[in-house]
Amino acid sequence: MANETVVQEKYPRKKFETLVEVAKAINSPLDIESILKYVVDALKVFGYDIGSILLVEGNYLVVRDAYGVKAKDKNNIRIRIGTGITGTVAKTGLPEIVGDVSKDKRYLEFTPALQIRSELAVPIVASNEIIGVMNIESQQVDAFTEEDLKIVRALADLVALAVSNSRSQRFMRQLNKRMSTLFETGKLINSTLDLGQTFENILQIVEDQFDYKFSAILLVEGNCLYVRTGRGFHPDVVKNFRPKIGQGIPGTAVKRREPVNVPDVSKCDFYLDVNSPTKSELAVPIIYEDKPIGAINIESDKIANFDEEDVILLSSLADQAAPAIRNAQLYEEISRFNLELKKRVDNATAELVTANSELRRLNEVKSDFVSTVSHELRTPLTSIRGYVSLMSDGEAGPVSDEQKEFLGIVNEESERLTRLISDLLDISKIESGRMNLTFQKFDFIHFMNDYKKEIMNLASPKKIRVEVNMPKDLSAIDADHDKIKQVLHNLVSNAIKFSPEGSLLKVSVSTENGFIEVSVADQGIGIAKKDFDKLFQKFQQVDSKMTRNVGGTGLGLAITKHLVEAHGGKVSVESRVGKGSTFSFTLPVKRKKD
Image 1 (cartoon, rainbow, N blue to C red):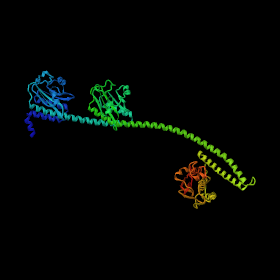
Image 2 (tube, rainbow, N blue to C red):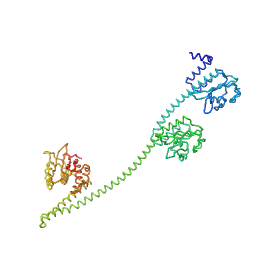
Image 3 (cartoon, rainbow, N blue to C red):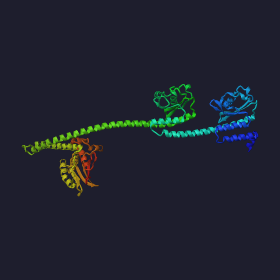
Image 4 (cartoon, helix red, strand yellow):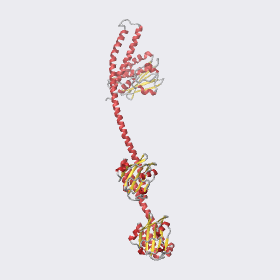
């Protein structure tokens, strides 16, 4: 109540009530134009002849509301800041009371018919910024006092508050709109990984948000920019415009890494004139991971068409566009790479198919050759062995001991050559798929007892002790009798071949989970683990002095592996160098029907 009493003492009751009403209007939801009219009406209440509110627009003061002046005159009043009494107040920020305007050279007379004699002008200041001037005029000399100055100052302060509130509200509206725009923009830009569509989406947003004549997205290529896509330009401009980084408005924006807003391109010394209708231009860089990758450029056929709000919005758009463009570029690169890779893979596959076909053909030729040669060799070998046997028996006349020894060597080598031919024929049949198995049930115990004698015969030349272990009772198995004997013979003969004289050879038979397992263990030279993979490959032998001495085709274990697997079993090996080896194979007791 004390403050209200002071104000009432300062102003007559009617004027005090007017100030209160103006203050209420400022805090109401009225728009700024309505509030300014409210203030101007208040000036009438205070009894002033002429009153006006002028706000700063660029370098000028423009009448926003007034009374006592004709509308046509009011619309023509534009006072440059620094000129006239009101322009001086707008420049200095100090109020002025002019008792006789005819004696003040600064006075600008816009309406002579009004015969203005005195003037009072007060700056309107908001947040330490002069945003306008409140001006009252009278047809009488020395019409205004310090008391009037206080009143107008109070009203000017209320106008400043109203303008600040209006600007804050407008800023919040613009901020909300910008945030909403950027949110929708982000969704649209990131809605695709197609590079061309990404650029079209960006330009569509630019078209929706800005007043412009031409737009373009330029990308960095080396030390130049090229137009990736544009709207409004002649196709030749899009095709041929390739400014270096640092040239032209977009090139300058990329080099500086900051927006470049040129209100009048005719006064810009780095403007490149490729589009004559352009009057103003705005370019913002597109920066990804601190590296400029391009620019967004918009142009207008109007002077000073783009303001600070446009700069902020276009910069925000560029910030959102950068990762979307880069992601789309990477996706395009990956797509191109995948196409190229597919093409190369297809070509390589075609070459491999051709090569494999040729290899299969050559393999068939080789198999046919081996089979033919083996058959052709078998016949003369049979004759050689027959005649050697006759000569050894003395059927062709007396034979000395030395001759018998030589004939024995010929016979052994003939048998060795026969085994080699048999191995070659078997591997040829395996490769050509002509290796047939004849399955029949037979007693495995009986089979082993019969074969035990053969093992003893094979081992006797080297005085190798033989030990055969097997269960007393064993179910009959369904297998190819001759092929199983061949498997066992290959393993036993290998074990004897690589065992020293007087060593022990163990052959063991066991059953587990429907399978028979046969193991052949020797005390020979052993095999290094790194050589295990070679053992069951064709024409492969472990490279050691002893293997070179004993020789062999390197086919026995390959044939063994195939025959065991053809029965549904597996072959395995355990060995240590110098400690001997154990080769094992399994056979199903009951054969699975195909």
